[in-house]
Image (cartoon, rainbow, N blue to C red; front, side):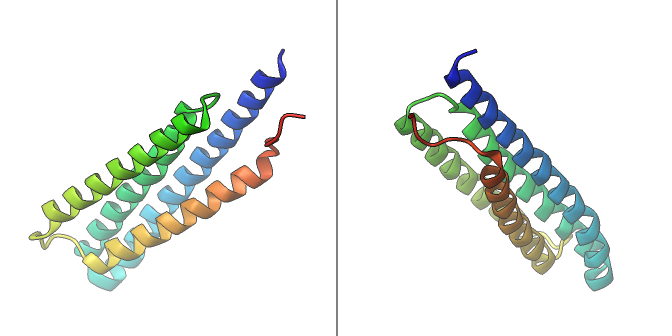
Length: 140
């Protein structure tokens, strides 16, 4: 087995860990956010939590997916795919906010808090997965 394929296997393991941990975070946010949202704002709070968790899942999933697509590719390709996925996520966010703008079935504050916790938590879990992954960054 070549050294390059060992590195790629390690990178894929890091991304699987990030995806698993992000999924657990989003599931926990959906449950806990729904309970807290219900206590704070009733059914609208539950919908706000579920929408926030869904958006957080989409954002963190697309990030991991875009990184997985560029394993073994040149840095410029990785940069282009990651930037393109970021722009795509921003378009989805704007469209979702425009669609939800006039709706009153969800609580905006609960959605924002759950989405914020999901985004920050997902970034921290991704960092933890990369740090613990022990992927070499030089060719010696």
